[in-house]
Image 1 (cartoon, rainbow, N blue to C red):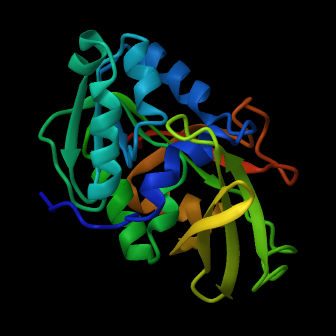
Image 2 (image 1 turned 180 degrees about the vertical axis):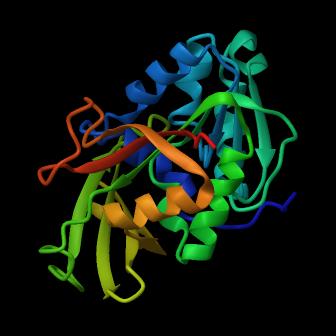
Length: 265
């Protein structure tokens, strides 16, 4: 299995604070409901710092998390140390690349929450990731994942401009304000990717005391593109939604959310 890599070295430090401040982030209850219905154990691919994983373990469901980012997994391990023993006992962590890891066991539910599929930049890697996830499905098991619905009319807007995305104060330093900005750098329509920079600025008494930044490239998908990947991976949709409230997937959607199973032969 692949070794941990030093990705998200900067973003990992600010991840829980930033996403904890985003009140419109509503994906965790969706995956929690799926996990409860499955009965567990659950495999979460791209578990990060445990934003989705930990609520599932707290709900009494056994869950395995896989990630290839050493900094993200280090913070998840710190988060786990603060949990009761019963929660810690339900969590197993694994270092692995979503394109080729193998745990040699099957799960009734495999999830790829909060868009790790958008870190796959080529069709070959996208297919490898889906095939790897499907290899861990039990008979009639379900694979669930989400990607954002691309807004083509907005892709080229605000390139080079900083946008404030989140603001919070860490519990350990309530007199500090941290702000996360992002700056879209470029868009590649041929390869369906865009590149941005996350900027983290810390202020105390209204004075800037530190600034760190980290680049990120994300791919985006069209609906037919995903359908073709499902066919190639031997998967078929059993449900698809345009929101985590299970709204229909249509032209007004903000998300593309899929529940997949191995295709019947």
